[in-house]
Image (cartoon, rainbow, N blue to C red; front, side):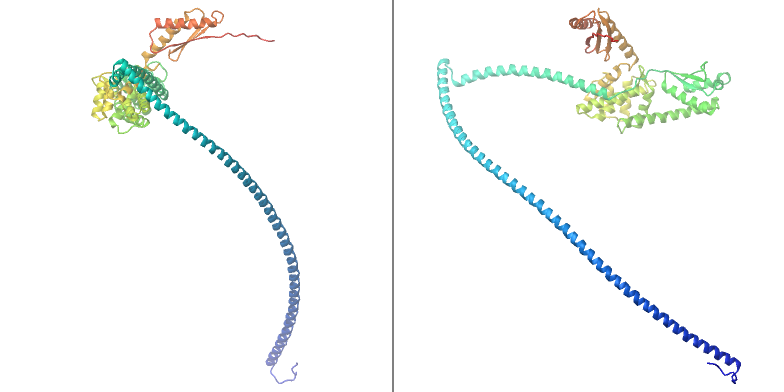
Length: 529
């Protein structure tokens, strides 16, 4: 549409109408184009949908065919499985039928055997009944014969039956008394031998289960110094430091030419240990003068008291004991610094406690009470250097003061024979004390005697002709003699062993037994080259 050029409309209106007309035409054209595109897309969608439907039908057909094939295969497998199970069940049923048949046959045979046995038992019962009847008849005949014989005996002996019984019973009683006395003596002898054997076994087991270190008696302690200049500082001006130290500790301080070391000497281990602690503190501090010495000696004494308490607590804990007074525990720790013939008293007390506890357990006694008594039996030795009286008297007084059980008090009072033991535990502690003290090497005197006895035994055996070498073993309880095979033959070894035994019995004094073993060995050696 065109607007007439010579219109009377204004120009603006004309332009507006033209734009509106153009916009309308564009909308119409856009609508037509959109409709065209929509129809074309709709046709494409229809075609695509038809293709999808067609493909779906084909895939469904294929899936149907696959499912049919899979179902056929599964049916075939299931059928095969069912057939296999049926065959196995059929075989099992056949086997069970065979077993049942065999059992029926066995039962039939057993029934036959039982019938035979029943018949045999019936025959045996008949025989037994006949034999019983015969035995009854014989008993009746025997009674009659006995009555006849008794009557004849009464006529011959002119005794009544009661008088004959009295004579027989009197003789029988006398015989029984003698036999009973003999049996009692034999029983007592066997019991004594068995008791000795059991006691030896118990003591041996107790010794084997316990062990204690051997501690020799030492009276000096060496304290190392950081340098030689420290010696002069320890001595002090005109020796005032060393005099102050010795006066406060009661220990001799020896400063000699030994490089970087001084020696503390004292027969009292407690004082020597306190002196060692104080001297080491002085060396570490470096300020050495009488005032400092006094201060550190006091600290050393306090530390030593704490150490004694800890040592006693540990000992009591290790032995499984409890309810011991704290003062007694401290005195137990003090035993570590006491010796008896070179044997450490605390180690000795621990060993006695273990030995006594083991023996008490074997005998059914109170093991813990035996350990307690064994540990405290020498408690008086902890302060016997400071208190008048023997260690037994001091120990009894201490245990009474701190309310120890009566068995413990009696054990302390009786372990050296001052009083009679009133309990088995007291006897066991006495035995354990003797075992611990008599152990070879435990005490200095015992060690010397032990070595001397072994040497004397070996020297005695070496005097015999033909003896090559002799060895005393097992603490002198056995002597093994090696002889020269060129001098002594096998038969002569027997006579040599007897001669050695007789000479030992005549010459030596020894406890127990000494086993003599004579060994003769002959070797023929050739070397092939």
